[in-house]
Structure formats: structure tokens, C-alpha cells
Amino acid sequence: MYVAAKGGEDAIQQAEKLYQHLNGTLTPELVRSIEMNMPYLVDRVMGEGSLYAPELAALALAQTGGDLYEAVLLLRAYRSTQPRIAYAAPVKPAEMLTVRRISASFKDIPGGQILGPTLDYSHRILRLDVLDNPQENNHHSHSENNEAIKIADKPASPNYPAVADWQRGQGLMAQLPEQTPVDAADIPDVTADPVLFPAPREHRLQALSRADTGGVLALGYASMRGYGLIHPTVNELRLAHAEVQVKHPVTGATFSAGRVRVSQAEVVTSGGENGKTGLTVGFAATLGWNEVKLIAASTLDMEMNQPSPHPAHTEEFVMYHTEAVEASGFCIHFKLPHYVTFASSVDNIRKVIATFYSSEEKSNGADKPTEIQSETATSEAMPS
Amino acid sequence: MTSVFSQSDTLTILTHTPAAEVKTLAEAILPVLGDVRVLINRTGLVMLPYTDSAEGAIFHLGEVLVSEAHIELATGIQGYALCTGRDLVQALAIAVLDAALTANIQTEKITAFLQDQQQAQAAADDLLLRKVEATRVEMETF
Image (cartoon, rainbow over all chains, first blue to last red; front, side):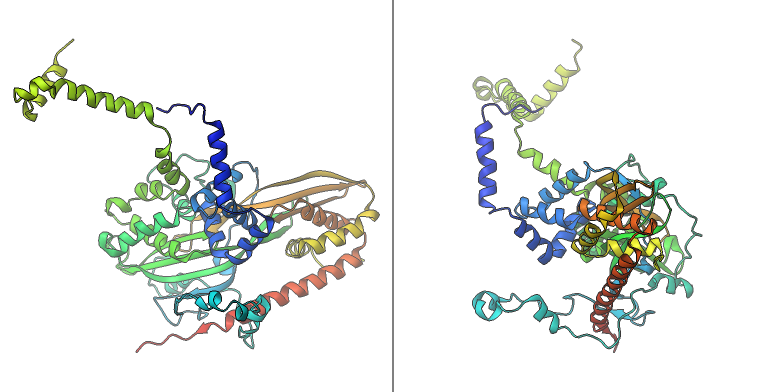
């Protein structure tokens, strides 16, 4: 039970002003700077906010001083004010403009390994020279940095086939079921449907797509360390730009409304499903580029398919506990006034103390737990 | 003349064009279109389904913020646009150009613009993919 906060209106207003004051000035320039210079942070907010809107994600980050959960909440709240106008055509990974695509399971995959933008094989060292020699580093504009990038004689292919399809062709993986056209409006949707278990695969993958990165990583890491039943190998990791294909309502012509950054991961393990031979595959994808989340999420996808996973890797546990807004909201609600609930608990404690630990009983040595429990049980069992 | 671009290509090029350039062209063409009635001009969401490469399921990846515009000329010809982001004027500008092409108004000018933009967009993709190609790696095992 909660109580209303009375008489604190001015304090609340001042607290909000102090919060904004300490976070610095909120300006359009700050928002643009975040959007341009912190794309992975913006991606994370969009992925967990389940809304692709880089400008608004940057605004949410600026407005909250970089508090990720607050920023995700703001984006989700904004999303809830907007009508759903249309459903885009399903994105096919093989048709995306791919800028990074690697495999840790096979080195010679069709199309080759493209590292793309990554720090995977780089030293992670703080660039102290940026702070110590600001004069020397001020002239490093974007265009000058671009000049330092090597331009190959020929462009990379924009599209790559799925590594899994290549493995299916070799009989290493179960064939996909025959695809039938799907009306996008009929696809199960966790934002509109009740979530029941076992969940349809569409619910599971959508939930993982919008899941909290930290939550997914914690559960996925627990699986990888040994609480799980499998050892994942990254079969394919892909960063790409996907077209948002929609239909002209008058003529029916299909066109792209723009591009969005998306990422996907597949992990595999040997042994096959339920004792079958071959490779078992787990999958996850999200809005924005977020590799660690997807490797953990695709591992959890595979783990959840196991006959008897660790309790923390069951579908219900994973889906319920990696929902960023619900989890953070429930956690932080505990700092709000609980005075009545707590006062009730304290009253009970005081009654117990007064009843069983009074000075008279203490002097009689009546503080034996066995006797107290016995007496209480008897009194509660007595008909009134 | 009729446009050499299909409506699909036209709208795709225009939604990928910097908003300021589309608006400038639409402003120039608007006076010759006559009365324009705005049927819809709003922001909203497009749900983006995605294909699962493990089991073939199609699921919702998340939603994309878009701006939509639907206009009608005095002749009854309609123009439509849907583009990512929350720039309502950008969507209106694209819808104006869509209507103009359908009505065969200023086709030559718009087509020239589309050709320039298509080339610029192709060049940008080509440059990006050349930078990507430079990161190709041959893995070896010992």
C-alpha cells in the first residue's frame, strides 16, 4: 500500500530542477552530438526501447543525463503515444546491406569473412593523448579520419547468404520448414498479446529483441560459464542496414521508407536437438547494432529449447526477467514511500515483542522458540 | 515526358535523399500544382518483421518511427509518402513530388533530380562498401 506525498510539491519541483541543473544544459546541439557520436549507445536505447528513432533516443539520453533505463522508459512512453500506421515487409537477412559478417565456426564461409567496423582485434587503451595534447588532436575532423581509411579497389558485396543455409546444404543442420506467406498483422506480438508459456517462437524472438542487454548478458553468461547445457559457437554475426519496405496505399507500389541499423547472431552447438545428429542453432536479432546482447540472446534461445534447462534458462524466466522497463520499474519502485506497508510489519513485530518478549516473560525464561511456536500454532488453530 | 523511374524507385530515392534537398525541390514545384489538400500528415509507427534464420519464423523486430503524408490535387490525383523519422514537412514534400509525377507535372525537372540523387546514393553505398571490403580477412588455422 502506498501513501500520497503531501506538502512536498515545492521539494519535488526543486528536486527535478536540481537533477536537470546537475545534468547540464539540454540543447539541440547536445542531442545532435549524442546521435552522431554515440551510435552504439543510441542503438542500445532504441533496441531496448523497441523503437527505431535515433534522434529521439539521443534526446532521451540527453534528457536523462545518460541514465539508460530512464532513457528506454522515455522512448517506450513516446512509442505508446503513436499510432501503428503500417507493417513493413519482413526483412530477409540475405538482402540487407551488410557491413560486418563473421563466423567463428567456419573460416571459409561463402562470401568470406568481413570484419567491418569493430574493435575485436584492437588494443583497448584509453586515448589519454586526446586529453593531454588537445591542440594536436583538435584538427582531427571526420573528413581527415576518413582519409585514413583504406578504400578498396572494388566494393564488398552488399549481400551475403546465411551461413546456416550453407550448412543445411551440407546436411549439417535441419532443413527449414517450407515458408508460407504471412500477413504481418497476424504475427504474434508481445506488445499486444498476452504472453503465455510455452511462448510462440515469434514472442520469444521479439522479447529477446527488446530485452535488456545487461539482463540477457547475465543469463547468457551464466549458461556459458556452466549452468547451461551447451557450449555456443558463433556461427554468424552480422551488422547491417535493412530497408523498411512499405506499400503505397493508392497504387500498391512497394518502396523503402528508409534504412535502419539491425544486427543478428546465430550460435551453434554440436549434438543436434533431442539427440539428433548435426548442429543445433540458436538465433537472435535486434534493432541497432548490439553484438554482446545477440550472442547471449541466441545462446539463451538455444538453451531454452533444451529438454530440461537450468531454471534460470527456462523460457518463462528469461522472458520475464529481461524486460528492461518492467524490471527497472519494479526495482526502483521500492524507493517510493511504503510507509503503511512497512508500518504494518513493524506493528506486528512490536506485538510479537510485547507478547512474547515482555520483561516478565523474559525473567521467567519464556523465550524458548519451541514453546512460542507451539503456543502460536495452537492459538491459531483454535476455532474462534 | 514520363519519368524513367517507377513509383517504387522514385519513392525509395526520395526517402533516402537529404530532407533539405527534397523540400527545396517541392517548394519550387508546389506553385504549379494548384490547390493541394492534405488528407493525412502525421507521425506514427511501422512494425518491422524480421526473418529468423534458425527456424524460419517471422517475428516483430521492433517499430520504426515514420512520418506519413497523403495529399490530393484539385484534379483528384493523389500523392503519398512515408519516410523514417519525424519530419512531417519532409513527408509532405515527397508526397508533393509523388503527386506531381503522377499528374505529369514538372516531370523532367523531378526526373533529373532523381537521377542525381540516385547517383549520389549509389556512390555513397559504393564508398561504404569499398571501406568494408578493406576489412575482408582470410582466417588461417595452424
